[in-house]
Image 1: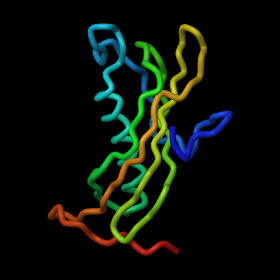
Image 2 (image 1 turned 135 degrees about the horizontal axis):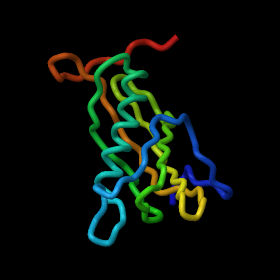
Image 3 (image 1 turned 30 degrees about the vertical axis):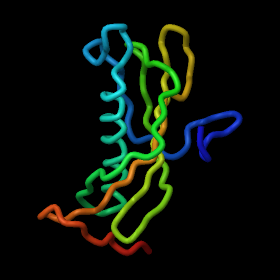
Length: 133
């Protein structure tokens, strides 16, 4: 899949969000919408990126998105974030989603992507990240 994949995969990074997949988020086949899952990934990433940036951030890119398996209703989803790179005003995070399916007790990776966030000021303009000590 990409450079982050491992032979015996385990979640990479810090737990940023956990949520249960509900019936209102499903398509006509009973699977969770991919777009809903991407939105939750964005929320998890924004939480971590805003901590790093010391304030407001905006999502500017999603790179290498891949869905590995469908998500069933009732699955508990765990979102992990790992910092890939910190630039002058941007933060690149690997965001992984793992599912704990209550019907079969299977723990598996659902998707991953690299999200790019940019620090912005109150006017919505790009700003420099605070210096890291």
